[in-house]
Image (cartoon, rainbow, N blue to C red; front, side, top):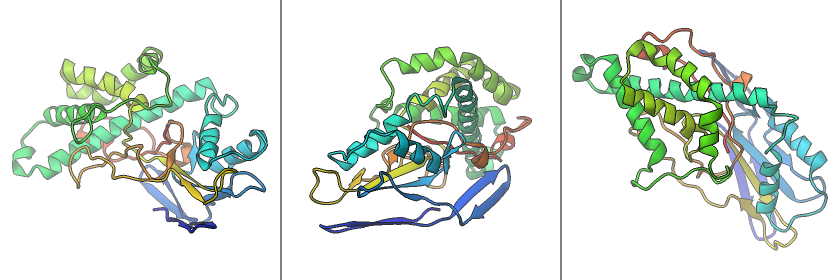
Length: 302
């Protein structure tokens, strides 16, 4: 767990971050204390950036991406701290040097596999928390219930209001994802769910989840958060961006696996899947609910 602090008054802001990083590979968890998480975003200007969560984006450490921004960003101060956040996140779009098209396809498969793994985690939770009456229910029934819950959570918030698409994507992007990644979606559904004999509605929900996991304002795995703080050229007092936070929603209950909303304490970074240093391998079989629920993965966000 990362600890980061911003102490502000009318004249200054002081930032601090720990150095712990957790690396997960299958069932092996390694904690190191040598990760830098706090940087001066622009040399000579009072603007800092901290990250928490996943330590890289598609295999590129955040320090490398920050260094790239420092070398390529337009010179000069910006009016507001939020402008630095917008500029940095905007740099990550269409960054072919770091995120080539073929790598994006591989990362999509890892992202979708991690979402499907979350569904198996939830199904296992439903069985374990259901008492004796759940023990006699077949895996297919419980798995279809878990799929239904996740499918609904992607579309609706806890208060019943519709969950929108992420603002960083252009209109119609969901259809682009569906069209471009149909083969990968079908491959992963067949690999993970075929042994359970799911009904057609559940399979269709999985295909829709394969699109929602990219475009919807809901994150079911670990994410990266970015916090920007300091002074813009037109700001008399220090600012932190984003300025507010809220509680994430839940897919089941307080004890169930919990999704993470983009409305967190940080500017979300562009959506991608996990890096090699922070993910577990795809399971080699899927004969029971517990097969997939044993792993874990991570990704950055949009």
